[in-house]
Amino acid sequence: MHIQHRYIVVEGPIGVGKTSLVRKLGESLGSELLLEKAEENPFITRFYQNPRQYALSTQLYFLLQRAHQVQGFRQIDLFQSSHIADFMIDKDRLFAELTLTTDELKLYQQIYQHMTIDAPKPDLVIYLQAPTEVLRERITKRGIDYEQAIKDDYLTRLSELYTRFFYDYDESTLLTVNTQSIDLIDSEQDYQALLDEINNIRSGRHYFNQSSFAY
Image 1: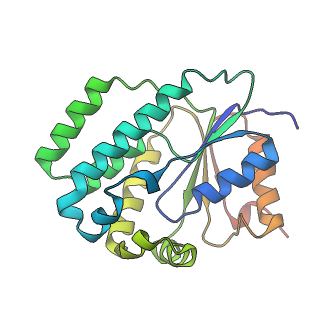
Image 2: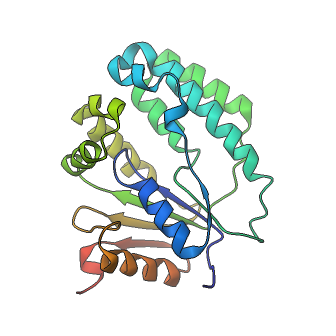
């Protein structure tokens, strides 16, 4: 298959299905995967149990971890092979705004600025959306222990931050996908419709939901 997009990022709030979609797209497009490693963060379980106490340590660990992954991007020849990731470095600032106090956020921003992170720009960003109740259902279904402590209010506020971020986003071609009523993992028809959309996209902002295709 001809690969139009050499570097694709799938983003969206917790539980929306980023990694599952990335794995499936990787198989279809023959792309190498670049996956975030949330489970390696030693603070993540304690954060969801006590967000106030562990927010800063959790966020700084993620920042350093993803910065290290981004450094690896510089060694990748995106013209020789295609890659698809389930995170973009910008997401760290969204979580920081959500979880940190004013003073902690200032410290985080100072560290972020001094790190001079230079991430490659994706050819295509796929932004997955779903309402809080759907995110909750998916989090429960996948059964990751530490995620079960996530509050609905946290999911709602996180989704709002993502919405605001992508409202003005213009650094890459953007495909916003409403996943509430479509099943991109278990419905081959839904997935194929999305894959066709991805293959036909050239530039600009695009939207994909159940009304985007007919059965």
